[in-house]
Image 1 (cartoon, rainbow, N blue to C red):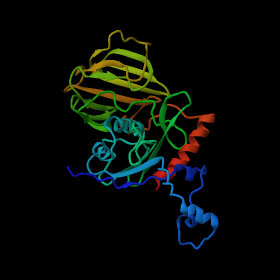
Image 2: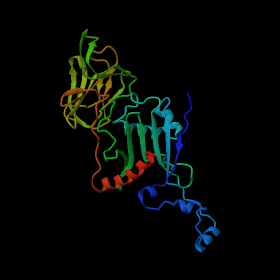
Image 3: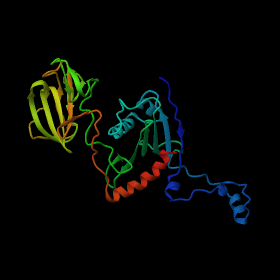
Image 4: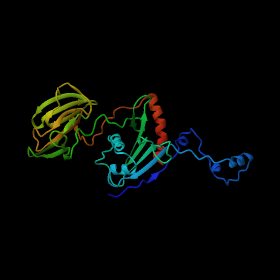
Length: 318
């Protein structure tokens, strides 16, 4: 595997960008500008004060193999890399969208005790992924007295209200299709969901908060769970080997809750989860559908965030 170099580490002071401090002028930095006065002579006689280290460090990396390997070269821990993947997941499918030559830029707080290193938590305060024709940016913001999260420049949470995947799967064994040859019925018909291959017994998680609309047996689906979700969505999980203990119709479920286990009941030719996502009862591709966001900043939080994000945006474009 080829190594990836950090293309740029370019700290700049956010105070200059936000107007809280005046940047030094060329005259002040150039000893040969011809200025002469008693005050300037006295200043020259004093020991020079080293400039304060800029509070942010910017790192940009080009992707050669994978986001994980590139993030590691940029000094990002696997845990932080996973949080970035989650934050971008509503817009970027890291399995499908990333290509060699794409790049990402991260802005970190600087460690006040080390002029060349980033803060101990290693969490970027801003991040940008450039996919060539498309660019996505996110910014970290912590509400007063609350927990922090990533947001887009317009104040929308980057966390989708839905998880993209309900299980840890090995591969997509059959994609969403309007015309797929059905291996059981031996004819072409729509495939209203995706088949995610996984071993029997793999836990199946609710991809969003909701309520159990149906739990039981339905012909080709075998053992199936159907959930009603917010924003006129519903989700379906089929070919289960068994249901979560005590799951019943009308029960409220939360995102990430185990609702069943992978099997091969019904019209299944092998162990997998058949997963459907519907909006207004119309099937949409679960792997590419645009997912609603969790929440949006409002009021004073929106104003505070906008001020910070606008300043950090300058670092992402530097």
